[in-house]
Image 1: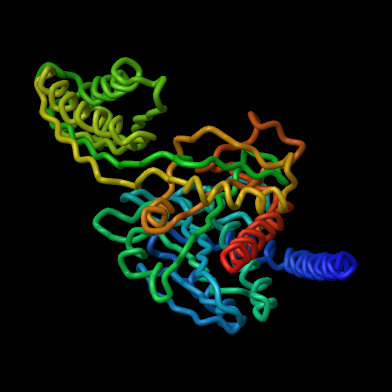
Image 2: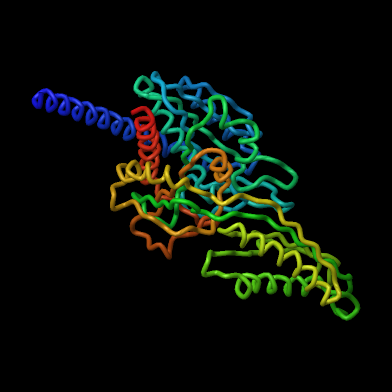
Length: 429
């Protein structure tokens, strides 16, 4: 009996090793394609809800693999469905596909030269947050998993989501709209996985956190009204520019003096301020647009309430008027603790145990959180920084110099494949 058990275990080990080696070769083979796709998307970026050509390229690839493909979800979203040959759970893998209104200045040969209009301002368009790498990684994952369809225990939904960076004013879109249109249904998704490339973490590494990993995000718009006058006679009017400066300072004291930062981090930032048309005219109105980041919903309510009280009060104190509108924004990106613990070995198997790191929550935000409100989800970070670059020297996301080392993309494919197979195996044991 012992001999029979030993023979059986040896056969199983050889079989598993052979399967893993086969998959590793497939991942190695697809790496060059992933890099090629990434460069094409990088050179041809499209803004949120305008990802028409991007969606066409994704759909074409998924159809070439023989997948069931649905397009036009949340305007430009694409979903491919791969049904394995054996019964099992439904797993969703997600990549975001939109670019940013950033003018690129990296020295790469495939740098973006695309121009567009955003918020009424002419700007360059750039994949300055790495969504191009996310698309390419998920396309590569789809190709690998399709080749082992006969061994798959369940179904995979490849979700390519538009407008993660936020929709144009007055438009719906992104993960929220995909959920509303039933992307997690028919068949019903049991778990969803997503990744984000990190320009500050060295290639070959992965970071994660159970529970809240990324902040809730809200957009606010402040309009300050004064009284127009000649620039040489400020006493003849009410200066909304000066009032705006006081409001900005007042917003910062909400965080620095009125918020218990030992509990969680919080951020209020003004990203756009505009008003006036000429150097010697004090304008009648100034508009400010900014972001709020919170990791605690009670803290979010406190910041919202304080901003709504303080903004008009400051303007009134200087003789002007001000209004503020705050949208609901993205929820906190929340990794299901049980799912995170279950899938940690898959992350460690992909990158190596020493290269997988538990991190603190960050104040970046992700509308992947809308998927996680519906089904258990795990969101993690993938290293994209060249090994010879110091973290403090790496350009930040959303900047013209944002740069990704493409040697890290293969690990993204490996990790998605591991998560998928390990979850399927655990669900069908």
